[in-house]
Image (cartoon, rainbow, N blue to C red):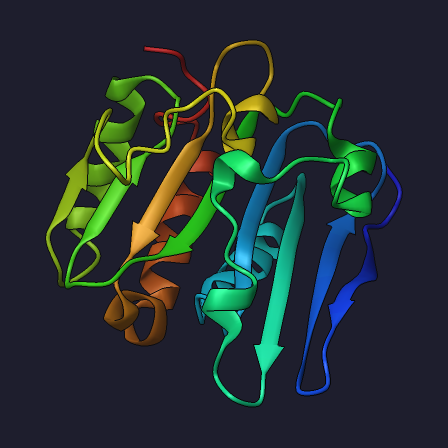
Length: 203
């Protein structure tokens, strides 16, 4: 296996901000992909979490988008819905779009003091992740399959990037989790993936 490299792609620039795409990948990994589509100051802390998790795993890639703006307008400018993100507008995403990853995790920010575990992956897997995170972080953790933060649409990039019809895992986190308990989330997800509990074992 070749060593992963970091590639960045400018996507948009304004007089007071910029939006870029980021890929950490060795060109052949199809095991784990960790994503943060709303990184930078759009949903602060998510890209840092995603890259930290990817670099701690033996076979993992990381795809992220990073938005920054001097006037704090990152969210309004660069927060497309996950179901609207596709390879046509994101050149680095296009390079991995057809690889079919075994495990795909998408990290997001959420207002309010809670964590929501969603995505198109099996509910039993989401409950396993929810239980592990519930023991690791302070806010309540809930596994969901429907509702505004479920992330279960087949058009959601976390789901179509996954192998076959397996679906991916979408993790919505409050700011306190992303800022103060970031390492606990990364460690919990790392353990779940490395020990094969939940993610790599279809329930």
